[in-house]
Image (cartoon, rainbow, N blue to C red; front, side, top):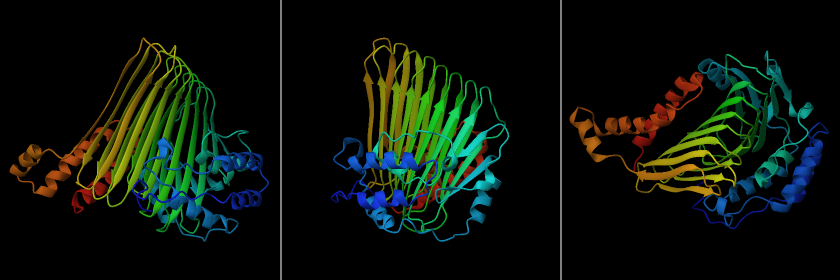
Length: 431
């Protein structure tokens, strides 16, 4: 998948007849009625086009072509790919209670954890799924399975809950969804890790819904390290009641085309949101981050900081919006985006936004785009480091700002190793 912003192909529509046929071919299970409603909704909108302001830099034409090809044979079972070594490596390196979703299907052998109510969406669970935008409707229409995680009031756990997504190119299009209902005063640490089981063109479409009740707290870490020919769309929707907390950390290291949408809906007084992200891009990678924090009531707080390191001909996008509704007095919000360009050919399109309809608020936002400081490079070289080592030290220090905000300690060493390896390749890439 090439960078979505540079190819101005005419939009390719999903074949609705193929889509409806694929939906009807899925099992008559607990998701059947949800699928039909979502398919009808998607048929009215289709994939977002680059004429849409929110999608002006990300072109899904290749994704639509791949999806149409897959829909023609959607009833076929994907070829079996041995993913045991990949799964074992993750389990050995991140101390968490792991649930595995392979090619969109929940591994039923993993659904027994003390203190957490776990249920497959295909066999029960929720009556309604988020389908308020086209990709989420497409996800629900073709969803074969998913997870519903419910925490009782006051529940708290010593270890994080991990969800590992492993997908193979033999299943060219996969939909995944996790729904979390965190009861009052409960606390959950959730890790979502997305990996490719093998090289090959593939599109994955993921949705994570988080309903955080009064006084509850959710720490959420999302790590994406897919193959270079992978395209992925990811949406996180968190709704917060009074005094609830949501702390989100995202790390994008792989993939060819990646689009992330994070929506935090603050519906209760005293709620707190923090969003932190790091994206590393090289070659022809395209990574698009769109965030939206909705302050519906006040007082409440939100902080946001995203950092990007770009090399080669990569293109990245950051669009962060904070909306303070009328009457949301006492809102305190800050937003920032910092970008480091290692190549003159790399491109970043950054747009932090504030929409304020209340008077008694404290809001700030800003963005920076720059290159490695020549004075700092000279200093490090004068202390015995060669040019590559000096650049590695400075880029690592830049990335460390996000790693220091990590809210789940169990991920730290795994992420630090991934970042060191990825940064070494970025610094060494011809500029």
